[in-house]
Length: 95
Image (cartoon, rainbow, N blue to C red; front, top):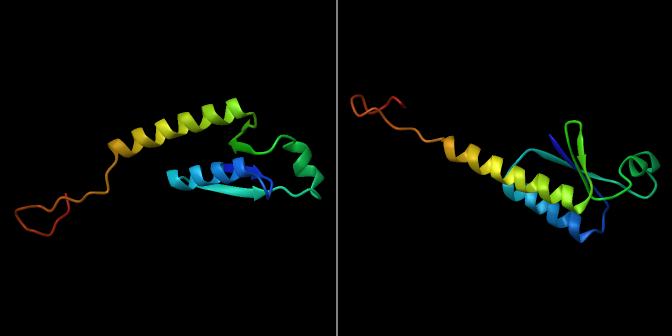
């Protein structure tokens, strides 16, 4: 699952969160507050995206990750379908 580590008042983080929401992909948003030194040290540069063992925190890394994610989602949704075609013989069976 994709995790977005962000601070509360950050327009870039707002845009990233909206982008993930618009893609309709599973993700979790973690607010990193000033008092949580453990998380803040781990993600010194916010916002940061994490997927599995990979972390992306620079603008270039985040943009590349989102570009690849956009392509992957588009390709996957192109070849998958939730359509159901009714069997013309019995009029009930979904093919």
